[in-house]
Structures are given as structure tokens and as C-alpha cells.
Image (cartoon, rainbow, N blue to C red; front, side, top):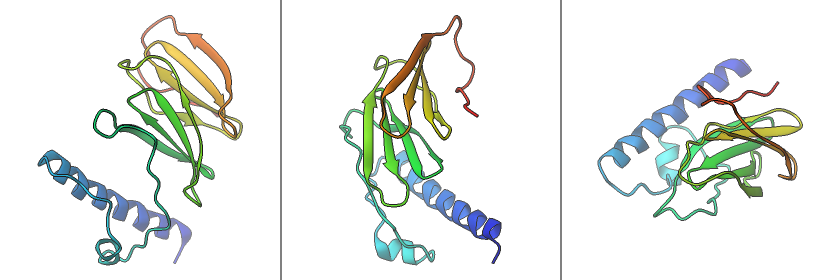
Length: 148
């Protein structure tokens, strides 16, 4: 099987599972972590799982991207989380901006990860989470930032 075909199957499977989980959330039901038997029905196995250090009663994950070997997630308590995409190990978590402001999807390249919080731009070192740069934008952003 070609790598692109395999990737497409994985993405479609994950999207289907996400739709299933979203429908349970919309129905007001608690959604457990998918069990191994549930995943096996779709021919999937769980490589790892990780619970982010957020209070699930008050906050949730808004955005998640995978860039290279790292998964970056933004939670609505204005925190950026970095997780090793191969092992599931938490690498670092950084607080940025103000809670309650609109947090956009993060963007990353080989050296940095950037995220917008309201009018504020934050750029962190992708390996250790050190704050590298911050700036206030002159106008409300219409979309997330992009790093190349």
C-alpha cells in the first residue's frame, strides 16, 4: 500500500471516530477514552495516550496540530502543550496571554511554534518551550499565523 493511501485511511478513520465522539458530546454524554476493543472494530490500535494538565471541568483543548515529531495543543486556559508524537510523552507546557481571549490554532516549523491570543502573538522555542518573542498586533487577526 502506498504511504499516501495509508495516511488517507488513517485520517478518515480518525475523522470518523471524532465524529462519533462529537455526537456523544453533543448528546451531553460523558465520552470515555476509546477502549482497545472499540478501536479494533475499525482495525486500529492505540500507540499511546496522554492527559493534558488542564481541569476538564472548566477547560478543554481547542486546537491540535502535528508538526514533525511533535503534537502541539492549545487549551482554552491559554496554555500551549507540546507532546512527543511518537511516545506520547509531555515535553513542556507554557501559559501565554489572557484566559478568555480568542486562541488561534498554533503554527510550527523546525525551530519555533507560534500562537495568537487575541491581539497578542507569542513565539516559543519548539524544543524547550522558551519564550522567544512577543508582539501586539495592530488589528484583530482574521486567521491563525503561519510559520514556514
